[in-house]
Amino acid sequence: MFEVTDTQFVGEAIAHHGRLTEGELAVGDAVRTRVYSEWREEIRRQHTSAHLLQRALKDVLGEGIVQAGSWVGHRSRCASIFLSPSGRLTPLQRRAVSERVNELIRADLHQEMRELPIEEAKATGAVTMAGRIR
Image (cartoon, rainbow, N blue to C red):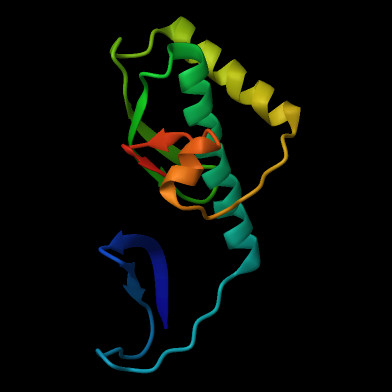
């Protein structure tokens, strides 16, 4: 058994990182996969929280904020690395960002996911993160 602990894009492929907990695995072996729905739903929630944080940072500090990286995990954990023209957040800014995230959560906004050509996405107002549309 191979437990996946992370996935990342490597070019156009998706690499699965993890550990082999049982048996053997070799290149070319056929595998059977299973996704735990509870785990997947938690990751989905954390992924949404990363987007809410990005929006709150831009609302509080301005559109000059650029996401430089993120990590989305489970057990109520995520991390965001961002670049700010004004530097490190002050305690007051941290509080304002936290309050804005909570406002967005309470607003219970409708989510819609669409895959669009880049120019069409930009026309809808899609927010760029790390220099690209996500």
